Length: 147
Image (cartoon, rainbow, N blue to C red):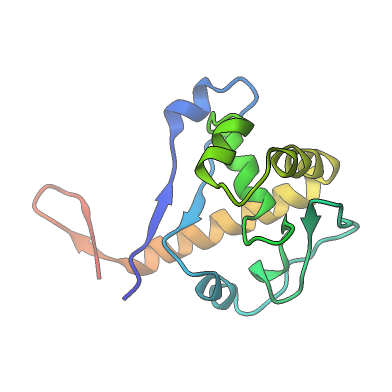
């Protein structure tokens, strides 16, 4: 069974002046598993248009905007930035993504903020739903135990 992991750092997010509430970043899943987890449904992208660095491909990353030529979603770059990572730090952690692409992804987010925030909220709802479906009880210390 695939292990579930996620990132949530309230401390960093709370200290980041431009950050809103802490958000989840999905990790620990293959891209195909995430596509299947969303029921094969494509994201509604509204009036979002591709750019030189951002593409939207049906069937890839559930149709969510991503850095061209990669599976790094725009939403992930936004969330890493909200958690306090600078564009340079994001590039260091993801060497297939150029610094220009990180800045373009952030610009894409701000140009399409309403639709992107809706997609991020849908991802967060998925994480919560998945966490609840995986919890089978608690251990002696009161921590959740997963199947």
